[in-house]
Length: 325
Image 1 (cartoon, rainbow, N blue to C red):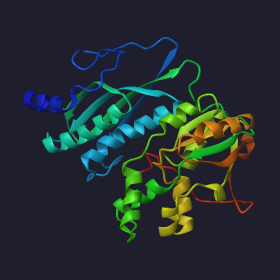
Image 2 (spheres, rainbow, N blue to C red):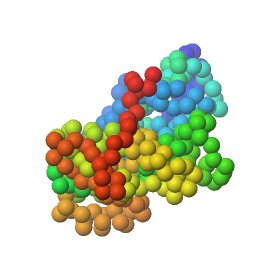
Image 3 (cartoon, helix red, strand yellow):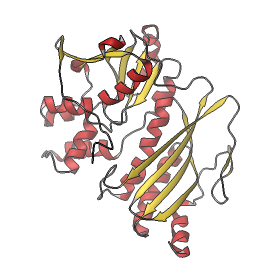
Image 4 (tube, one colour):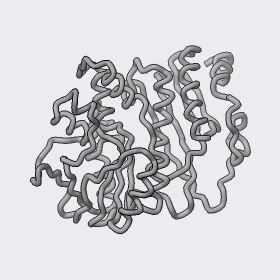
């Protein structure tokens, strides 16, 4: 890219926004300088999003700016962390001012909402892709992990499942519904997921394990079970499926999307019996529903799906970047 192109991009990303006190030096030097508060642990996640693989080629740049940050915030939520800083490496096929403005406006709107600061990044020419490095803070010793589930713990999820997969199917014209309100609602669930930051923070001292649902419920619970060396019994009848999904799609399809559709960005977590009462108090005041969908079982049982009191076999698979070629 030419010097003028770099200056143009910098105009949209080197903004004066809320300046965090823990940022000693942000954009403008070889490195950012950050002060990690005493008794806080740094939580870091890196995510690469590639056009045609992780997002549709015709996605509006404002939706991309929002979603790119939101899905990374969801990783912080799964650890119980407070959002703090972001780095962004942006690869673009060309410099398009309208695209840059819409993308950056949406990105900074969400950054400001969570009192985050963009502290650095890079730009280059090539096929469109984004690499985000998100940083958060969590009180020392209180981060949520995947590895703490124990036999007998109860399995919960926040929100509803399957809406995002339905929204993607509508965007790709694989499915069609005539109700414009329902159509818009499902697409919004795909393009504008809401990271469960407050729920993750509330779970710090209550959940034994947690993960965000990105690849699909079954696939992501599998990550918890492998890390915790446990099995699970999941109750299909208890899955939280939205009324919009049930009204406009076959029940079996809605269940498949809820179990393996992916990109819900809800939290899945396990809670010991002794903490269930405190859980109701902590999450009940946050305004987002949460549902018990099963129980952690011995590792030898693996993961079993139950419906109407019987074990059922479903051909389910979560999203895998290399299988999706």
